[in-house]
Image (tube, rainbow, N blue to C red; front, side, top):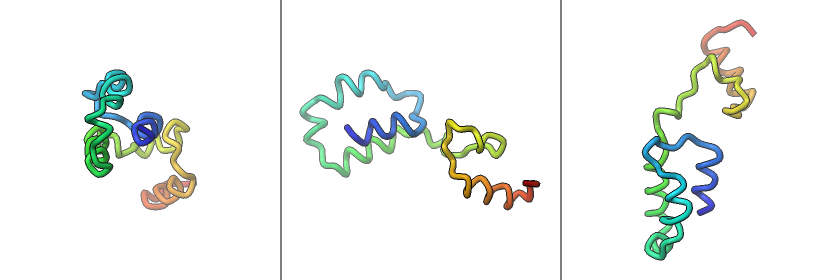
Length: 83
């Protein structure tokens, strides 16, 4: 469940994920708890919204994305933007 909490708090989940249902029901089911860690990781990976892995350059400095200043500087340098 720790993985799900981290994903929920830090990343974008696919719009089809029923967060409340997963947290309150599915994650508490014995069948889910008995799954191997690798299988649970596969399930969690499928919950991620891969379309949200890209952040627009214009939004990189938005605090909600928590992008490291070095990464922002690297992108500005790559796109040859004035500092």
